[in-house]
Amino acid sequence: MIKKRSTTHEWDLQKQQLQAQLEAKAKDIRKRIETLREPDSNATLQERWISNIGRGVAIADGLLTGYRLYKRASKFLPTRLVKRKKK
Image 1: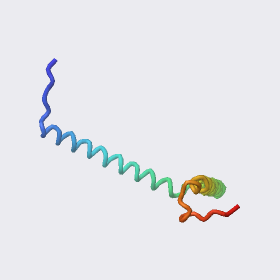
Image 2: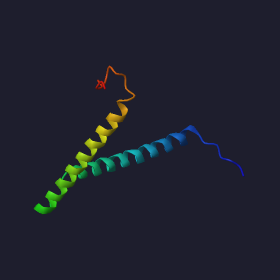
Image 3: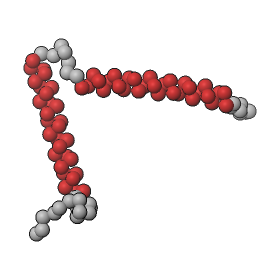
Image 4: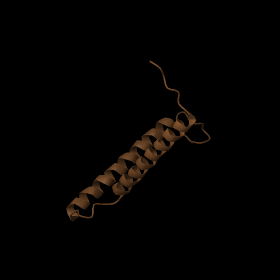
C-alpha cells in the first residue's frame, strides 16, 4: 500500500472546501437563532400566552440558577469583591 503525498495545492483546496462548509453551517445557525427569538406569527392568542409564560419561567429559572451559583462562588472570591455578613 503506497501512500500518496499531498501537495500544498490539495491542502489549499481542502481548506477552501472546509471554509465553505463552515460558512454554510454558520448561516444555518444564524437563521435558526433568528427564528427562535421571534414568536410564531400563525399562533393563536392562547398559544402566544403559553409561549410567553414558558419564556418567563425559563428566565426566572436562569436567574435563580445564577443566584445560587453566585452564592456558592462567593465563598471562593476575595472579600474585596463580595461583602459578607459578619456572624
